[in-house]
Length: 578
Image (cartoon, rainbow, N blue to C red):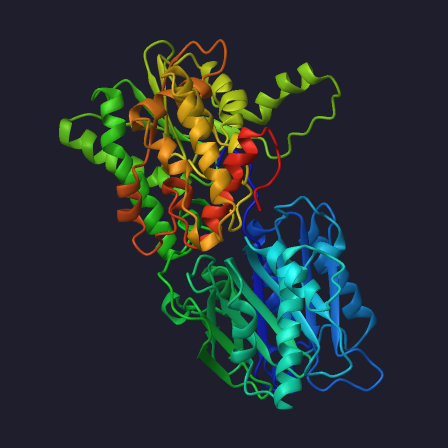
């Protein structure tokens, strides 16, 4: 993805199911659990650039000593710093991070908070082990304000309005009520249900009680991803399947997806149970996981991304008018690479059938170490384009069409300011930008950092089309409707923005996006093509969470968020819609 957007966090839960002496004898280390949780976090570090945290629970803690160890970091390289911190604790204390239950987290800060207090795991302290709660997760709720107000009205005092603090308190409250009313647990699943059935949004919640009970709960729509694996030695949960496979050398088929609405319970004795928790809802797993977020070393994701490349070939061939001989094909590094393989594979098939060849290679090269501290704004803009470099001598000046594949186009800023100007230096006759995703029309409220409409190039193209057609009155009417909608409960609201997009034909919208992406002074002809929603569903059939493309939000809070986003835009308020 050329635009840098923040997205879902990563979580890892590990329970050692054998006595500590077992791992010392078999693996010749007293730090087996720490090594494995660190590896799972490392294999998911794409999911967290702002913070990292790790907690370790001891099942038989000594009196006078904490039952858990915890470290967090918001350093420039938080995961590396976290592992270093924990390593020092291991050297200094023979018991530190040598417990039986581990909970790790990698944080992508969608709200810009970078302090340690915002890092998971969160802790609800108690001297009673069965009431001590540690929690980490991958979540974004649309109704945090309402939950906070309800807790405050019932007598709770929360020091933070962040969704992590609210979720922690909701579960802690349900836990206390369970013990108060029944004197003991009927089971953790009813407790989690009592808390989580009020949540509107996306979540995978992993946690542990001080008595050794551990759990992982996935939202009823299955929006956020979660996978689990267990054998005689371990029980583990992670946001991505390959992280588990890398740590425990298990096959793809041995790692199961945590079903939506289910809770995986790991009891103090190590027994594993998959239990019902939340009422079933239509599965709406996030398709952006397949397009971009999760690593492509998952077998299914790798195949799906190649299919996305295959599906673009008819549009690419039409854009080239069949002239493959005077075409060079490339991609925007690095997440589009696997999709590019699929595009190239299918293009080679077309070329072979027609007796042609396809020239391809990496034209755009991202300089990951590029930094600038120049204060002058114009100088910064000039240097910004050099975050990308190009491979010279591959494109034939004046005669070649250059096709570049990107996995998606969100804001379009990097494409306009850096990528297209640097590609134009190669002097191609035409540049075709192909997006493996459809146009992103609507804001997200379930984890991706794109909550304001004016950040989306497609929405700005919509406004341009409405103004060009003299349809400003429709925009004002939608604004008034959205304001009225926001007076209704979330479950009674509908997505008002859909009615505006319905006024503009798809080809007109794409043409307007192309005009907005075109930088001043670009010499080459420019064409932008997008994946169709139909082909996206065909390529990723089990991940129908496509609300950013269709406006079909899986929870009532989604419609409320998009209506608030439209109102904020019309009132010129540059603030988040949730």
